[in-house]
Image (cartoon, rainbow, N blue to C red; front, side, top):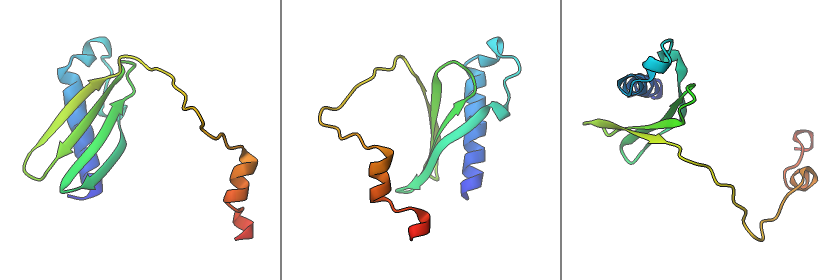
Length: 106
């Protein structure tokens, strides 16, 4: 299966899953165009895609296909907590410029 085929398949599966969850009741214009792939990969014999929609429902979907069968997991963001890491070095734009030379200098 090619990359494009899997991402198209994943979007279609997520659309069907969202419809089965009843999103069209509150969002009657919901369509396949509202589904997008955030990330995908092929690793250890499995295709995997993380998808979401333009809906404000906080859901995202993980589509996995191993060549024999596939499944979709649906997740819902319940909350977001900010955290800091003590001792984290904050880099300024000047610091990054010293580490990564400008394109002209290469």
